[in-house]
Length: 191
Image (cartoon, rainbow, N blue to C red; front, side, top):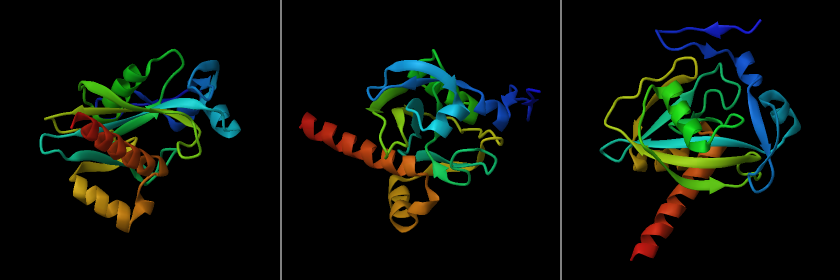
């Protein structure tokens, strides 16, 4: 039976078993949809699909990072982006990013897409849209998905990536590098 969990007055959140049944779009190498299938089958077959990541910054320029709960099926116990998740079939990337931010951190903020990366080994065969947002609010992590979280200075993240890269998800490490390359290129173009 399809169970739902209710925790601390939040809307019911699907169980890990329910998440495996989510219907996602299979995409081609250009991130164009070609079919649909459940999440578990897509992962087992290594098919291309879409995900979103959000980098959320505060007024001090610090980034919020979350440590995934040991209960989640992807990257349990690892630090990663502020919010992330799969794009459901028929759902746009922006709507998906906003949904993930709401589900994981109970926040609603304006988001801007800064990167779109095609599926590759570095992206774990996923088409990734990276969004950036800014907040003055304190995130409220969903304990079903997040073990802990907090705001970190850019310098602290860089230090941890150099000294303990294994504490971060591979996708986050890749996105962090790509994001700062993109920021650097844009600032060079503006000069």
